[in-house]
Length: 164
Image (cartoon, rainbow, N blue to C red; front, side, top):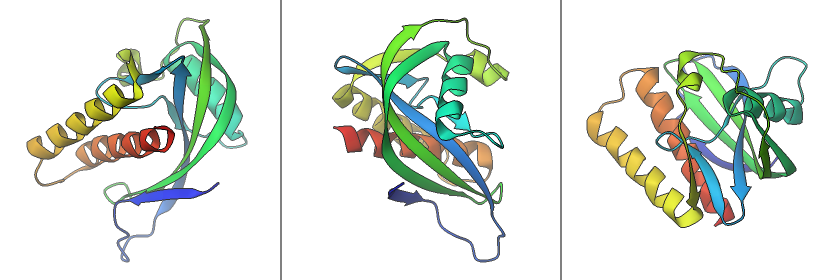
């Protein structure tokens, strides 16, 4: 998959563990689905799982959603230095089909997801404001909670730009 961008800087003193993940831009007519304050649905790829299997599982867990016409967008690499992880974010765009199941969230964060359908331009503005707010509230990134929040929204922004 084509590398779109790298977020974060490599620290030569860190031995990174690679963590493959998937993220999906779900389209419904002229709208895209955004979670919370600027996230895309998706998550980690389990051992032995294909990217498509991870997409299906994650969308059902987080939202109870099915999609069709899944196509590659590209890869974003995140260097998460507080976790010593190199996240490989394999990104896709898909067509919304239906809410078919009750979500089966894996943790309290997933259980609390709120989603919005937005035009791409509105989503770009929304995510840009979310990034600015994180940076304003955390001028120094001192832990992975902040770094992860920031990098995941930066990833969303980069992926939305590719489909604009």
